[in-house]
Image 1 (tube, helix red, strand yellow):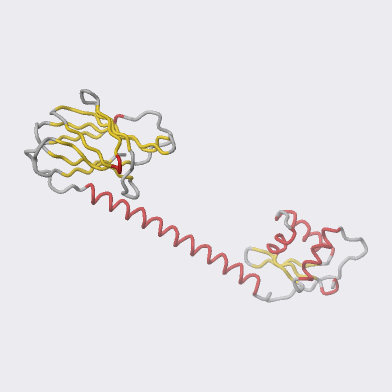
Image 2 (image 1 turned 120 degrees about the horizontal axis):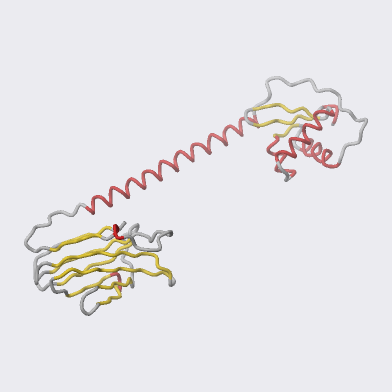
Length: 247
């Protein structure tokens, strides 16, 4: 989508000129390329984003291109119709990024502009439209950031409460089965729990072991079946308690 900003001052010699702007920053696009299908065809390199053409009456196609590192980033085609022999008109061009999937430039993106000195064009509402659109985008981005931040804070608070809150009832743990030797990975879990003071969250245990959640769950279930630990459901996670007789 391309938006043209028009300003019609008093007439002198018929000249069309203006500045090419980047849509999001409203900064001039240095060295943009402009082609006008007059006879002969006219080309301009918009140094500092500024261009100028002298035109007789007629219909013209203005092609505006902007390249960054030999890659076409912006493009527009705009049809203008000049109906008077004299005048001084400002045609500022606001360029939007080129769509990635576009291989051709569709005709519906071409904007028809007719200059007529005899008419008072009045206030250009494109300025207001652009400002409102940018405010809506900024407000939506701010609201999303605020909601995401609240969600993250609630998750951190819930995890902290789960770890710090004492269990309401301490289950009676059965004596551990020491008849069979423990594998090294299960011994490592017991060592980690002892180092943490006899209890640890399953989430923290997984970080210490640096393995998947499924493997940690299987190993703690194995230890629980042997009577070495007890798993307590707390919130959305588990707390692993070491059997006192294991210490």
